[in-house]
Image 1 (cartoon, helix red, strand yellow):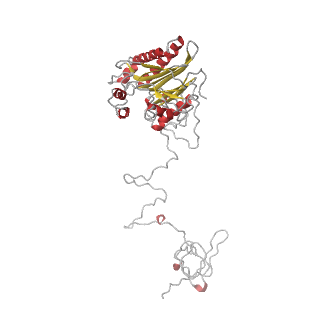
Image 2 (tube, helix red, strand yellow; image 1 turned 45 degrees about the vertical axis):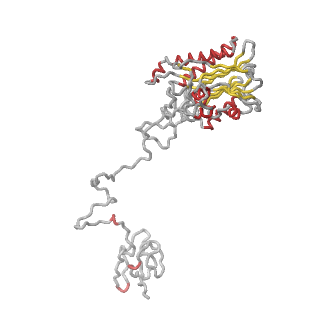
Image 3 (cartoon, rainbow, N blue to C red; image 1 turned 90 degrees about the horizontal axis):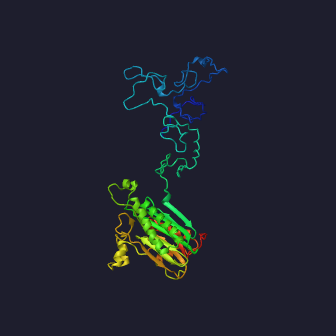
Length: 465
């Protein structure tokens, strides 16, 4: 078996002076090649305390020992240099140019498209827009470099009466409904509305699909000439294909509600008052067609603002309903063992098909034309025919006044009764919230509005617990 070549015995590595063992070919600490190290003389040079190195002592027996190939001639290794630190020549024998680590020298022009002299980048780039966490006065300009160590300034307290953004809580909201600081669109006031007036309550919600709420309502309480209490609820649904449907429903609900609350204390019969209220609502919607805002919004579409209306008046022993369009009124008795009822008939294509005997109700309302209305309030309505009816329930219950955004998810009277909480007469606001939630849970494809009126009417101040 062949044997490895033997090397001279060395006690320490010539490079790092790490102790060695017999037979080591390489230093275990720095990897120095020990095969090229000749035997060391017995007398090592002595280093003076001051650091000066005396001349080497003469070798014994007059032998002139050769200096180690990688030493400085005194038995110590020479400093290790990187290849780039040593001078060199090219293939023609000319000196090579200084390396990048050599003392600065005139730089050669860089190759096209490459930069080696890019300046040191700052720790943080200049801001291109004001930081939304800062106020307008304290935000740095685009040309200025933000100081990393400086904390963001607190948002300034908005002036009294100024609407503040719901997102950043710092910016002012402009007239178009957007934050001047972060640009966030603000919730519209009508996206979700709730109102309670005595025992009457109403809730309206934009729903999950529409970009705005085009429904509106009006609720209130008053007294008849004999002092008996009377409750009023009006619900309107803007026609989305018309111009300014949200304004139409708001104008109609306000006009109808105000007339009822004014006429009933004067002694006007509730059914006559409901008829007059529908006419007043129609006049209010018609007036919108002549406003400049309608002309600007119409453009080439020459359709007037329009909406539907449904309402109820409840007194001590009388229930009066009135409507134009496809919003509805339901009667739900407090005793759920007795049947509920729907008190209105839709002004719609589906209702006409059923009335004419051409389709049954299930077929008609399954048709895509089912919700095409045949009656509405607006300047382009064919002929206004207010519908009114009066009832004398023989037991207490709750009157549900709603748009199709709710009854689409509880169409029959039985389904509406199932969705209505049992304590709706005592807690009408809670009951209205539950019904709106029922529609939203079902999909919320339309605006949802519902008003609840307990029957018989109760004195003012008896509201939700």
